[in-house]
Image (cartoon, rainbow, N blue to C red):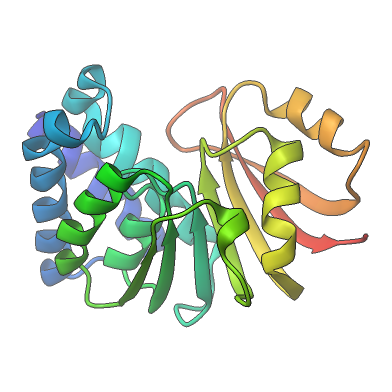
Length: 207
């Protein structure tokens, strides 16, 4: 793992979300756990380990640029190894629900929750099986194409729910398809980790 890259990432995060020494240590412990348990739980691609701080930690943490309130009840769909939900929780979001159908990845999330001082609820099930929860903030990375993602998260939204989605190079095609069946206001922000990626901020569903 490249120490210089880690320091660069911490410096970048500090520009929009100051990190205490305690929080940094928690992040370091989380990264160490990701690497330690990666083969057992199939958490991240082996090729991304060398760049783990940029590819996974900064990629997740950059959503905090658009989150003004630590107290928003957050639903993270398709959490996997904890991106972005676990990272956001470690960095200070007070209540995060991690929704992940994979039993093995949820086993890792149970181990990793010790690195956060926030409230974490792990839902080991398909999103469609979860009932009677509404979120202030919804996040997702690599969960589903936009058209299916919007259909999945819609029952969990309130009038003022904000959505932040990390999307890759096919984001424009995904948005065009989604607009055919969903009406929503959104802004596309540039990603800090890839020129091809975007952060999609949805501020309001119109239908």
